[in-house]
Image (tube, rainbow, N blue to C red):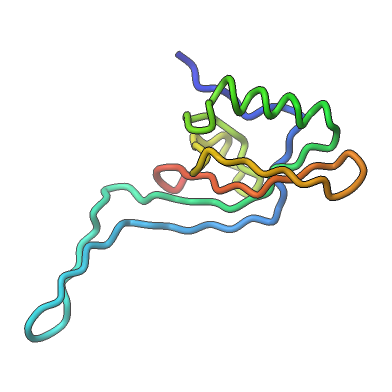
Length: 119
């Protein structure tokens, strides 16, 4: 089954940040420097962004996709606004979505998107 695709008409705003986590396991030693090793073979990349709907209809379409297609938790593909390498596979970190109307018919929601690996 193909993964759902991030809906057209919705933009990921450039208020964008990334965190890279290899889940480092650190063990203190009686003497000397602590030992550490990565827990994960591939990093978990989290990206902070804003989802922007420029019409109320686009917001409603996104809500429908979020609830019915990915159920707030499933994996999907999207075009990363920073990288030109094509689409990424990701999921939203939590099932909560909080929209704010920032101007007439312009809606924004802060999200955290997570993926495995750098691309």
